[in-house]
Image (tube, rainbow, N blue to C red; front, side, top):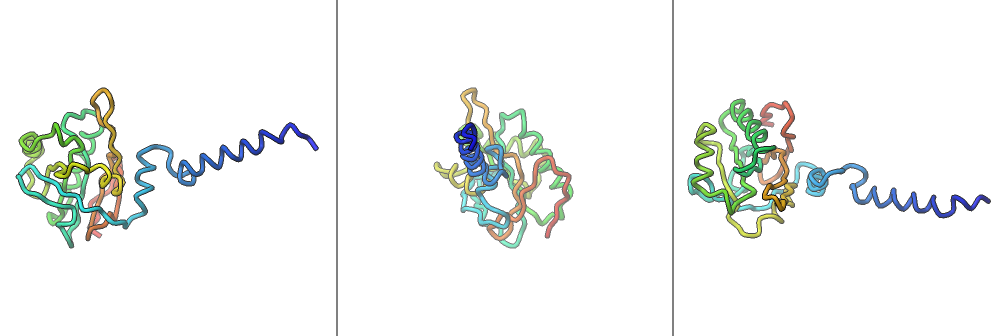
Length: 188
């Protein structure tokens, strides 16, 4: 028996087992994909998240039954992914049937004030069915995680976060739309 494989082979198997466990079966290789995968496969429930919007109204993602809600996550001082995500939302709005609700939620509620959210809403067309909101609750991050949204404030002040757009119907995420997808509003 050749003993030179006695130690390396179990270590290799242990390494692959750990990698398999850590990546949820080799299916999630970034923190963003890991968070989405942990949330579940659509349809999965959306936690009740209270938001205050640019118009001063308080809403929840549970408020809009029997309508599709498209939700993305942004912050106003972002100059990387958020403009792309907002452009995608604008595209979805322009191609919607008018009965859907669109909500852009700030992941920087301390700096993104209601007047700033209202200004951005106005600059992007002031659509009545597009709300710019921020979490009303202090402990909002765990609820975002349950939904599949990862948020991390870096030391330089920038915020890394999930850019996907979530389509919600009847309190469940029914579709996760990659920000780079060329999909139409499905309405199904």
